[in-house]
Image 1: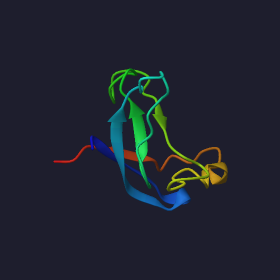
Image 2 (image 1 turned 90 degrees about the vertical axis):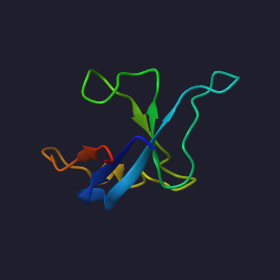
Image 3 (image 1 turned 135 degrees about the vertical axis):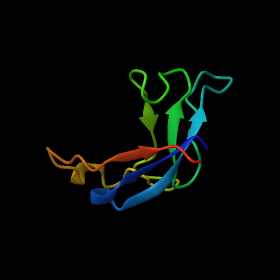
Length: 82
């Protein structure tokens, strides 16, 4: 686990973020359960465009309420442990 994500409008609080890459078939590996995945070949947090992904319909459905975000929602927090 490399960080946590909180998005109050979506009911997400301190969701763990895991660093993952590609499997042997070049498919993106997804962190299991209610978690978010940081694509390890994208930029580290704070230094460019980081790619975050997660399920919206299976295995935890971390982003199932993503359509509920509204223009101007700015309360999205990403923080590292420690």
